[in-house]
Amino acid sequence: MILSFVNSNISRAILSVIAGLIVGSCRASKSVRDQDTVISYIGREAIVSAIVADIPETKNSQTRLKLNNVFINYSTNALKSQIYVTLSGEYDNISRSDRVSLRAKIQAGFGDYVVSIYHPIIMAIDKPDPPDYFAYFRSNFTERIRTQLHQSVAADLALGFLVGEKTLPEKLKEQLRTVGLSHVVVASGFCLSILINFARKLTRKISRSVSYIFALILMAGFLLITGLSPSLLRASLISSLILIADYYGRKFHPGRLIVYATAISALVNPPVITNLAWQLSMASYVGIMFLTPVLKMYFYGNRKMSSIAEMVFVTISAQLFCLPISLYYFGQISIVGLLANILVTPVISTVMLLTFLSGIAPTILAKLLVIPNNAILSYQILVIEQLGKIKWASFNIDSSQPVVFALYLPIIAFLWLLIRRTQYSYRPVLSLDKSPKYGKIYTC
Image 1 (cartoon, rainbow, N blue to C red):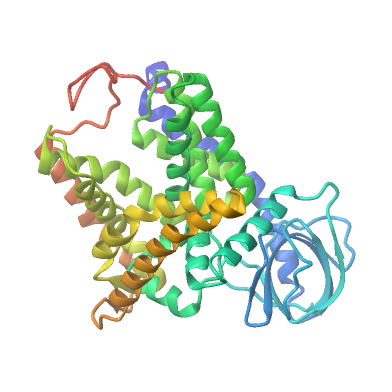
Image 2 (image 1 turned 30 degrees about the vertical axis):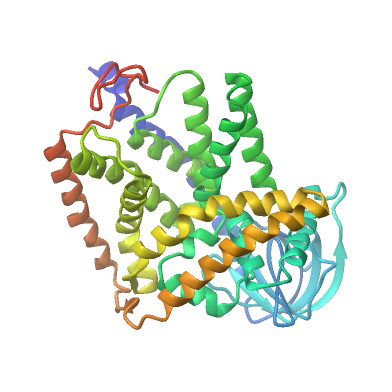
């Protein structure tokens, strides 16, 4: 009986989560101690030496840094904590992976940042040896795109699509939140899925092995250039698991895939489970994996549906499962989100491709690529601005109480009713099996 429990699918998934949480909690205990140590310096002046963890954000004559691997007052042990720093002036000589030494008063943090520092005295900037070549590539690449698109809002939007650049004007950021499109300018699973699909289509005629290896290499390169944000951690784990399983002719049940990704996330980076970006990314993926196929079956059955209909189902699924989390943290609901996604997202992959090619192509060819790219970006900006001007485009509600998560009960009930109605099965089937519901089961 014990063996049958251990060998059952559900038990393996449960044991994976428990193992990930146990090992992760052991690692998390050190993170908690490190954070407590950093917090103890709040209100005091200290010398901080830390690594720049992400591309510096320069705006309005200020430079914002995200620091980790922290040493305080010449301590001998690195503290695993994130610090937010605002520098007075624009510092082009600071890049990702540099070690900066600062003298400043430590202040309370916010969000994922344990503490924050404002307008410190810079004591030293040390470059890594060897250099972070991927950071240099990103810096040169983004500068070339900005030059081609004349430092415009279109350049910021294109780089937001491609590498998650955080330099959009505040007005456009607010409009993106209003129309429910904030997710498209964050390096996430959306970007990663486009990249992987492109890689596999490009090399599938060479050989199956080359196709999968090239997709993994391209994904790794993308992560090294953009940095491993919480949403990209989730997306890269799931993408890697799918690619490896698919290479061996197997497929994951979506529930097990999500469980394994959660367990590995807890193992690799325990605090990430509490990160808002990770939670929203995982919630949207759960909605897409569980609700989208049932909606397809309910409305279309075995018939082929249009790409517009599929996009509608994907958008509804992702936004519905993210709704309780979004309401709890932001208290905002976008009424025009579905329409905005239908009008804007279909051409994002084209913008990403044109932006990437114009960033690496010779100057003459790059100037030609900029013309269609600029036209599409202008169209997207026009749609975002016009929808954002609608008075009823979104509305705010006071929903900061945890009871808002009870909204998942009717959402799950709705999903369960659709599953009962369609008799849909999430279990993977052989690709040669034409049955839309059942077939030979492959387990991973």
